[in-house]
Length: 300
Ligand code: GDP
Figure 1 (spheres, helix red, strand yellow):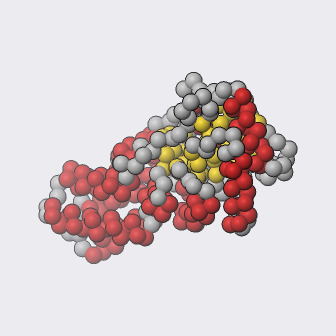
Figure 2: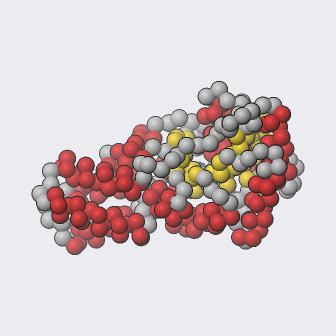
Figure 3: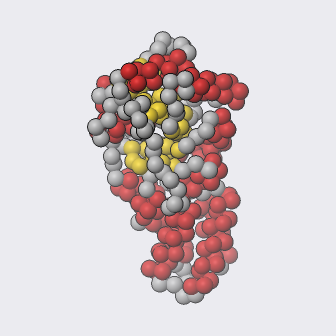
């Protein structure tokens, strides 16, 4: 896996360094606080969390009085860590008790990086010695099955596929059945993210989940969210969270954006922790989300 810090350092410092610079100024007048607010909003921290952060920072700065650079850094670091959440359970449930495989359902809007994330995750698990089956239940996007097959071949995971336009639930069922039969450790099911209507999505994903549950439990529902789509992507993510019981977020394309604040807003809006981050298109560009490393990368 890539180092989160190296990959983020290049794109994220607008947020962290910008805040550090402003908070270090001698006079913190209303204009400076407006700028701080603007940086947070621009970085997709979200309106409500931004207000909380600005209020917190104002209070803490007042208590501090005169500020040394080290004190400012410490104060900002603590504030960001508090917002990102160091106490959330970010365990990715990729192994199950007993001898059944764990089932990971990968959901999200098309184009967010579901197939890529499924492939990268398979690579990490196989690298750790696990046996992985990939289920290509995105039968609607013509290239998705072949794309997943390429990942499977590349990382050494079996791929269960169905006919193009076939029933996603039946592919998911077959993938889990194969996982059980072959005593796999993990079955990762890549789904279609057709957000045509909420009921349509609910029917489709609901059926996939129900059908899987005839064979095994679903241990992890990973919602893939593209960090570059900002608040718009968040609204779509919310629809998914209403339809399935999301247990973790994989935030992709964090390498291509300075809007790392989305970590804060998405967790707050959906009440689900970010567990994985996508940091590029390559096979190793997936990392577990570590709040401390993330915040340190932000403030440089
Ligand atoms: P899906 O439709 O949700 O399955 O999305 P794909 O997995 O096909 O990904 C859509 C595009 O995003 C592809 O070109 C991927 O290579 C790219 N992508 C996925 N994850 C990342 C990431 O973390 N960083 C970058 N830069 N690109 C990514």
